[in-house]
Structure formats: structure tokens, C-alpha cells
Image (cartoon, rainbow, N blue to C red):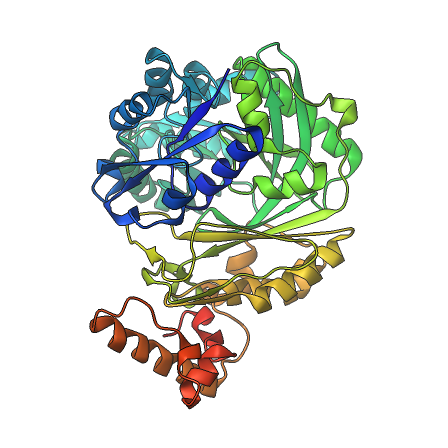
Length: 507
């Protein structure tokens, strides 16, 4: 049914989908902006087409251009990946109206679950526990105060539309509510074109635990265990693992069955994720449904043995689920660290530039899903994710030890990265004990700053290596290879550990 797929995305997720297409014998079509003309996903796909200027608003977010390219390339289907248009119900409908297959849920399911008010109403109707609260207009302070009084402070004010931490404020006291409403409404209007907000009870120090689900067009559905996603910055995930040390089998079964009720209420099809907040007493509350593939899907793949991208494609093609619930088993433990071009010592601010040295780790139980190579450009226009480092072990301790080794091997020079932050977490006693909450970073890392001391001589070597690179680059030499300078002391340092401290967000 599907012979060629256009991938409406970029970076590591585009490459992940290209690989799944190859395994299934399906052709792949990439799209790219000006900034991504030399990107890895462009060269890996069977075909590639330019779709516009570098800003996403002129390229990856222009659905009409993407559909036109799909028709030009004779693609049968479009896979949106995550981000960009992945949860845009209007785009999903345009794809269907064009006679193409959208590899994801139906447009109506995306619309219902993408609106926090409608999703909340569906969840309540399906007897899924929700956090106390309700919707208000940002100008209606009296109504908001009534909700807040009923819920009890602290409360959370958040945008009805969108996500990713935008349009969200924690309000500790009544005198902070007016300012939070104004700020959230304004931010939500700017980011999503919708200034509606929710006021709901703020669950103090919860865990963020999500259930991976899949449902076919025949009404059969399964849950594939949970992922612990509590380590976050600005409400965006940094480290994920499966299974959660907090979830026992009875709780897993209860949450899984509730998650399936939630997606059935929306007539959902394809792969998705139902997210929950869980308090210290194991009481859980519905948060939202992500109607797409998650960034952290590899950890579920490793502990279940199920390829979620292939599952997406097969469901979209009209096939039945590949497994029944009683066939799904959780085996071992997996961790994922999001390797981002950002400075953890400066509030995780993004870093752009050219990667002039790149070495990914390898070894037993190590998987790297990456969208970059040596000499790749990291543009300022898109998400800062460079790669996903995933490790698997028979136990959590083994997965952590493999992650430590893999992080120590990772070398990325030219842009600041958060590798050292992940190294610090892997050594932290609270993480090792599995005592996690969404406040973990705020509690244990001042501004996300690394805990380990910097080595002065390595910092100096990295600075000299960077200066040499920019000097030669200014003379239009496209690539510098430290191995070509064996007589240079700095070349020798650059070949060994001389670039290590660049991972700490330093030059």
C-alpha cells in the first residue's frame, strides 16, 4: 500500500524514519531548507527537495509546499516525525484531502486531543483522573481566582493550545495570579494564536510518567509500558528511561488500561503517548496525549523489542497491530540522554555554529540516533537537539554504567553541548537511587551548571584548537584535520582529550 514516504522533518528523526523505510523496502523523500542544504538527512534519503528559506515558517511549517513536493515525488504518504507539523490537525487533513496517507492519527483525533479543554473533557468522560481546575480568559481575574481558591494554592496557569513549556506559570499566592494570567495569555497568543489558559491545581514535586500506546483501525489497542521523564528543564525533557523504578506491575497495568480508554474516546489510530503526573502516593492524573512519535521512543523500543516507526507505517497502511497485549514483555532497562547544542551553565541557552570534530560512542548496549556528523552546521533556526544517546542493560545499574562510559567517549567540538550535565546526573546519588521529580534540575543543579571541576590545560588546548580552526576556515579551507599536524603540540592535544572541555559549553 505504501511504496514511498516523504519525511516532513529534519535531523535525527528524519534519519530514523529513513532507516525504517529502508528496512521495509519503502522509498524515502527528504525535504530541506536553505540552512539544511548540506544536512545528513538530505544525503541519506533516496530523494531530496528544497522547500524554502531557513526559518521554519518559510519551509518546514509550510504544509502546502510539503504536499506539493510529495506529489511531485510520487510519494504515497507523509511522515511528520515530531515537532513542526506533527500535531497540526489542519495539516493532517490537507494530506488526506490530497489523497495521501498521513502517518499518524486522523485529523479529528489530533484536533480533539491537541486542545487541552477538549482532551480534558474526553478524559473525564472516559473516567480518566484529571487534575482539578478549568479554563478561563486571561482577562477574567475573578473567574481565575474562583478556580484557584477551589483548587488551593499553588496553581498552574498554562496555555490551552500548544506545549513545550510555553505559556506556563506556577502561581504560589493569590497576588501573583493576575500577572501570570497576563503573561501566559500573551505568550500563548504569540506562540499558538490562542490566548485561552487553564488554571489547575499544581501537583507538587510529581513524577512525569507516560504510557506508550498503539491502536489500529480495527479498534485493537495495546500499551507498551511506561517511560520516566521527570528530569526536565523549562518543562522540556532531558533524560528518559524505561521502565520507571517507581512503577510496579499493578500500577503499570492500571495506568496502561486508563491510557487505552483515553485514546479510544478520541477514536485514535496509530502510535501515541498518554502523559500523566504521578504524586508520591502513586495517585496519577491525566496530563495530555501526544499524537505523534515521541523523541524518547527508543527506550521503549529497546525494552519491548518493537520498532515503533515500523509500527506507525504498518498501521497507517491499514495493517493490524503486530502484537497483542499478552505478547508484550518489558525486559531489561534503557536510558536516553538528549544531547543538545546548548550551555547548561547558562540556563541551557542554545549554541549554534559548525561542528568541526565529532566522535560518537559505541559498544555493547549503546545506540546513537544522530542528525549530525563532523563539519555539520548547527543552525540557529531549529531545536537544539543533536543526537539521542541511548543505552540498554539487563538492569538499571548496567544501563547507567554503559551511559557513563558512552558519555565519556562522546566528542563534539565547535558548539557547546550538555554532555557534561548528563555526566553529572549519572553520578548524582538521588538519580542513582531513583528518587526523581520534575524539580530534579532545579533542586540539584544551579542553572544546570556542571558539578565537576574544569581542567585548565584542557580548556586552553580546546581554545587554541578552536582558534586554529577559525583561522583556517577564514581562508576558505573547508575542513581542518588535527592529524595533519603531527608536529604540533596543540594538534596532538586536539587528537586526544584536548577537546573534552568544549562539552562543558566552553570555547
